[in-house]
Amino acid sequence: MNTFLAIFRKSGALSAIVENAVVMVFLKGLAGIARVGLFLLVARRFGPSAFGLFSLIYAFVEIFRVVSDFGLDTILIRSLARQQNRSEVLLGNALTLKCLLSTCGYLIAIFSFSLLYPTFDGRPLLFILTTTIYTTLVINLFNTYFQAKLRLIEVALGHIISALSYIVLTLLVLSGEGSLLMVCLIVPLTELANVIILWQIYRQHGSIRLQFQWVVVRELIVESLPVGLSAAMIVLYMRMDQLLLGWYQDTRSVGEYAAAFRMTEPFMLIFTSLSLSLYASLSAPSTDFSQRKSRKIISRVLIFTFVSTFLIACLLSFSSRSIIGLVMEPSPAATVTLMILSGSIVFKSINAMLTGVINSLGKYRVITAVAAGNLLVNVLLCFMLIPRYSMIGAAISVVATEVINTSIQSFYIYRLGGRASVA
Image (cartoon, rainbow, N blue to C red; front, side, top):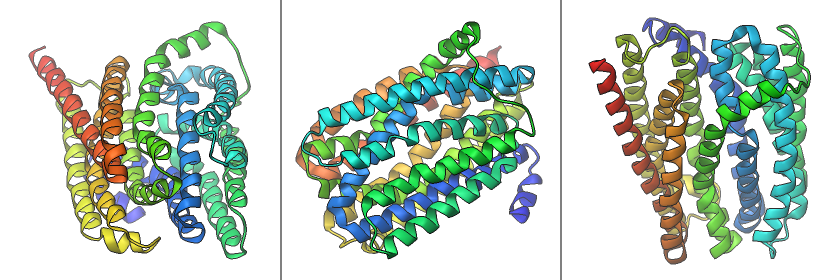
């Protein structure tokens, strides 16, 4: 990693962003990539139907994890970067708000899943996985503090221990003929261990306790509301494919589709990490979008993202049948689905960067409007294509939505850049 960082330090403008992005990959990305790999082992061990049920529940819980966050992490990065003297007050009130929102998310998730999928016998898995709403939100709160300071390396220990524990325990369960319920239980337990370690690390920088100051809480709610709505709509349209597959089709179709979808996720984790570092860097008080240096950073990041993801998408598409065969019998539909979804890597990664740029300017309502449009387009496409083309229709819906998303955000930034040049 030191060699990798040394190469990018020579670029000057990108050093802080890239260094933090690399650390993010080793912290948040390590856990995510490990989880994706083990999910695919679960698919191989339990088969498409059981994996489909597991994936549907996990996707459902993911939605409520994002909704329960309410956009707090995003606005906190910007607030902490600009108001370092208020760190403890902001974090304490955000922690209280997260606890309240997590409880609401937990209860609504359990009730709504039973309402939408009454014939699916997955409630024990649901009860366990929804507890990750609490652990994930607290982990993200600590990450936000160090992300705002571009010093994520300091929280490496908790993430590495959590990821390695998850890998080892899951492999032990799978090798010992353990149940799917035991696999689910490992997720919140390892995240809880991460919470404890991160709390110990943060104590070296300051104290954190539950606080409720109405002025601060109102400030957080007002600023995070458009971000929270955006994030909710984004995760909803990103998971709409699996939700409607489970509604229209059976768990086997969900399982085959989820296997293909999860194979694209490790690459997305890398570029999502880079977008968060870009956002944190551009949110600094000294940064101005009209400056040539800022535009140069954005251009370099976008070019790097496009070239890298295009090569990844081509490799994944050309090898789709062989890659699917590592997990399950490569049906023609699953192979074509992976080929189509590989294209989404390019557009999703670019969209993450564009969103980071717009959010760094405090234009949260713009992203809310874009997300609303994306959700509407995706819902319409899913309802039209999934009943007729099943998982292939779901994949087409994903890619088409992301292409439209890229077009809209690119046009907005282009217009914004033009106005900045005139000014």
